[in-house]
Image (tube, rainbow, N blue to C red; front, side, top):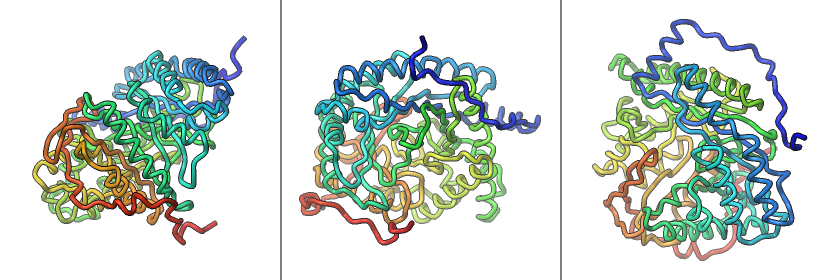
Length: 470
């Protein structure tokens, strides 16, 4: 007998996409010469029915359900990549926030559940699994506290598990108790992986106004409104946008720049939706969203920083950087919205410093500082991402960095995030190598002034007046 969570075939009722010869040839050029790829195909799996008063039973159910739904994910992604000639770099899984799944058990140490997630991810062959998560923007449940207490050991003990927490929102304000506890979790995760440059922190992120259909790690998870299973894709295209701008007349005005970016994002989104719908069809699940985010890599030319400099900034971080980034983010969103009715996730432009060679160079030359990065996050997709700081950075300083970023999101009704890595034994200006997509980081100086008084205060920053709309 089939298990009760067996997926049913799903027909989305849409007509197959058709493409002209010219569009196909353009896509071939983008793939071959401009590092265009599908950054991730992410299968979302609901784990609500895995909840059990016994934690070991919960672990067994979680492991079995992930294997049941995701056993063909890598095979399907590779077959689509072969059929269409489009690279699919990562295959990932996103699950229901674990605090909701583990609540019935009453367990305080959820590391066994993280190990079950990791074992399942390893068995099906995916790169990462996201969802060791909690929503605490207004307060903690017992299960939320268990997640927070377990994050350092869970991330240190696993290879593929990613954790995320929601610390604030425009409607709820910012839970400063949670911000302070999250700062402690960051420092402990860094300590436990000191031999790997604090690598556990690269799998840990906090949000204000978290989105529940994000296919990118470390924040990937699926929310309460999602179906039993759902397939979403994250598309990357900095190299394609850079190449398009290089071909543009250098005397073209900014409207022409925006139009070029928008048209390029349109093409990238169409490709992403084609792959996403085909993957969902082959897996017998629903297609969710295509996240049209310019997600850079350490590869030369695949850089958001390089795009900003083509727009007209002398060096990323210099005067005009925030304005150029605002133009870029808006044009990407408009192009995506023109191409698909299913654009979601974060969609825009990511600025993960260690993963973008142009930004790494800008930090090395002193053009890009933490203060400028914070200003840039007011107009980009996420926030302070993959920022290395000295290993002896205090919890109070981390609290201040996180609270500032949460405030930008709260007051501007946008998603912001912080993924910061205290690197044990490293100081400002020193370099840490993580390799792969995580790249290279130059440790940045958070400054000599802290906010111990703010860190010590308990409570919640209340929601702004603009949050009271319904």
